[in-house]
Amino acid sequence: MRRTLSALAIASLAVSLTGCGAGFNASSRQVTQVTDGAEASIISTENNIRVVNLLVVAADGGTGVLVGTIVSASDNEDALLGVAINGTVAQLTGKNTLPKNSPIIFEGPSANAKAVLAGFGAVPGTHVRVTMFFARAGEITKDVIVRDNTDEYSGITGGAILATTTASPSPSPTATK
Image (cartoon, rainbow, N blue to C red; front, side):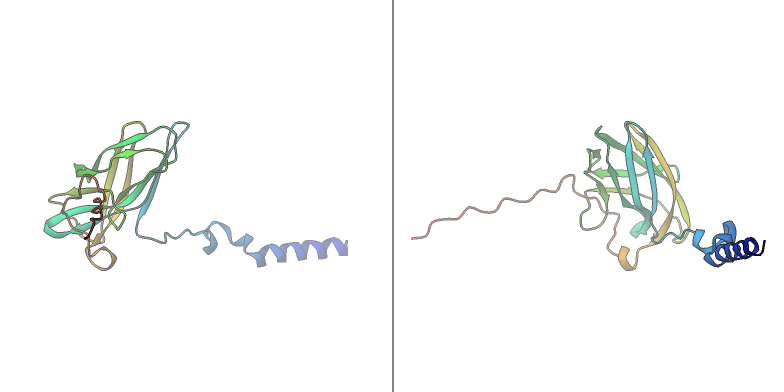
């Protein structure tokens, strides 16, 4: 009997010391988002679309500029048909097709697309609702933060992105006499 009581005491002490007895409000169970950008996904048997680091920057002239990356891991090609910010359709330029593992990147040095909403007017620090419409997968709606046009987002403007980015051919060498 004494051994049984000792074993039970040791077991209960071990459980309480390891934090398992802390319950559902334990600090180790609280998930903290490390970046400002939100994440969303559409995953099914035919779709595998992920949206990462999604946010909106309040840029010059009262425009809202979308920042984030969309990638599809599905063998079925999809297309981004449009983006709405707080229910208003943004002007979408650049790449909109989503072949497997070929991302659509809004803003930054590797940007290949741009979504701008004129007359945005949301205050930095608040949240807005962003909806992305896809040809095959349907839509993703996510509440995202609005950031001001400072720090790492200082270079973001409401200006349009070129439809395609191509390298200009280098001149051919000419013979000298």
